[in-house]
Image (tube, rainbow, N blue to C red; front, side, top):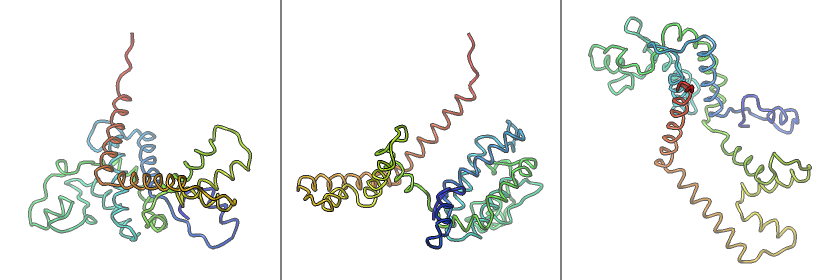
Length: 272
């Protein structure tokens, strides 16, 4: 069962004892937990600032993206996930006096500048020019427990699938479109909304024809054609949204929106 770490639904299914249930975690949820933990630690211990190695909001976002990327690049391999997560932590906390690149990828084509230099027999360049998100010793010491918790082998085993709850959220959206949370309704209305939403999610618009047949009503050909057109349109839109350039565009817009929000937050309030 794929759900949040604190899912009430999982407990309900386990208590029902209908069949064995395996608990899986949502990658998006773990990704957000990592970012939230880093930002909370930075705020509580005042680890931000403008000096090199500070745990700024931007640094938290980058470390969070490192965490997610290492998971997605090592799907099905919990041990490799944990190793890669710690490699990113040690890489960012390394200095010229204390290089910690022993877990970084080795070889001349390594993404780690230090290991690449070692493989080609060159002198490793300065860390200050090559570590884009450095962590000072104090920051590294403060966030190490977070990395311990978020790289736990048990957690890695539960997210090794790399899946998310996006499909669940889609079903929820279908339910609330038929039965808004803002309007009080009875149990029969909720049950009907759930049944309709699940049928639409699994079978598309054509589920209405199946329902009509069960009720002894023969659907008209015009209705069938309309349902087929709607289903084709939905599939075409999904395929279009899944194209790499569309995904890249959405990420760019999201990144720009976050950047604008940070600028607005840091802008001094005008008096007068």
